[in-house]
Image (cartoon, rainbow, N blue to C red; front, side, top):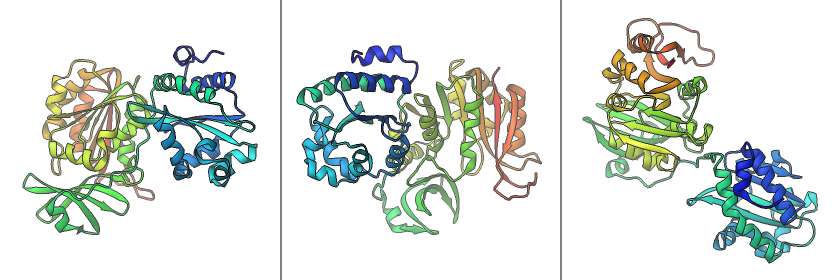
Length: 409
């Protein structure tokens, strides 16, 4: 089998098949006794090695520190290095990754090839041998093939695996003066509509908080170590719109906050393009500085009014539209009326779906009913999905998050 990554990307129907094909070609061209092809955020493809063991190691970053010298040596060249050449055989035998993965199989030497695309890490290919080490010619062959292997794998849409939230230094005198607020550490504070917006770390989460006259409202929150988790179940319900949509190639999010939903979409639907709209540039800046917004791939950020942005959009622009926008404590009034939903219907592609987060009671005449009426007038198959806590006794009078779903025909 010839080692032609570009041709193989054309020939194989999906990413796992491509990875198996690449490992097969490398086995023929270079030779190995065990191997894996691992992309960040995806299940590894393995030969001989146990995939579950690898997944656990990747999830816990168990070997990152041990492999760092090898990774540095590889990146100083063309992305490829052999562990025993860099560390020496005696030192390799002492390392946990070798004892736990290679030694049980009789492995002695591991060739690591690190994939990166436009400076962003994508993953790695490992080839292991039980006998003789890899020759300079073997290393050169893998080095020459690595760019094509990387681009070929990315053509299947590279999964996005987010890092923990950035630990940026406090950015304002006010934040440093506040230091702690109601049990949390204030990391930044900006003036906003007669009050302030704080970034606060509390109980393992980073919160974006609107504060005014001694009262506060948490706009958004993300787990410090796993910012895909908001701790609020309504964010996960946005995936109902994606599940109901016929396609998932482009989405619109109105309302930025900590960009948790955007981050989830980037990881769960690799390659999806997202337009993110927020009327407040200060919120966008806070999301970039404190929630890693700039590191989420294929996100186009627009500082604009959500109603106006959708009204100007060409027809059939998005597969999914998500609205999670609050001005102070209320949804902007223009976005709860029928004209807004008429614009959304026009801007959705055929078979597209919308998710709209509201807060209120299912009975009564508040925002939930206003959004429901407008959605039913313009969209199809409208559903209301209320958020209930475990063990909660349902009451239609209770104030809660309610996600309104509606589809375009």
